[in-house]
Length: 249
Image (tube, helix red, strand yellow):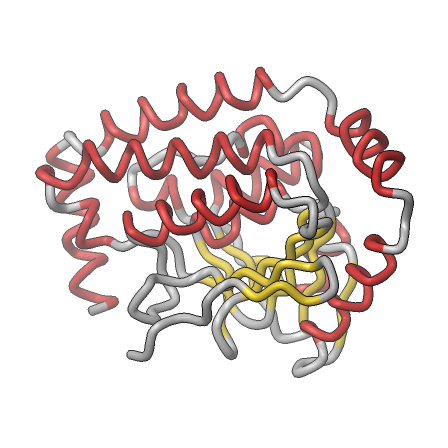
């Protein structure tokens, strides 16, 4: 695998690739740390007005690194890195757009709930199989998903583990726009160009008003992470994760 692209600033828009540092379409501890650092820096950089998240070619993100779930010696640092990233996303003061082309699974999907707009190709799919793995949702999606999808939509998506096609995701409200494959990044950059032309203070203040108080999101992130960590200590959950890890290896 080749290393993933570094963050790239284009006309006040920061392009950030969601992948491991060695170029896999998953998030491991180092990737969480790298993403959190990038967002911390972007929050303080006046040249950055919009962030666009993108995946690798043909795949947005397949979720977390199973090998780290199964290694108890890595849990403490992993949990710290995950918590830092999720809290950073929840409190990030600037618009975040996502361009999704391909599969968005697990955390590769839940981070999309922190985006102000998700633009997807017509070949994209969305799935959050946490319950199937014996785990709970993350990234405060136990709050954000019912808000965005409605309770019934969120229950079906998370508890049944249904895979959403792009059209289904748009109908529920997760996806804002669908474009043909191969054009999704250009479409996201087009929306970003519209945003960077807006008066900065008015844009950020309006977004902040729409987002409201984020302290409840941070509290829920901590609660979800605690339950997630407890699940990783359960023998039945670990056996289930080991079976799945062998299937995807």
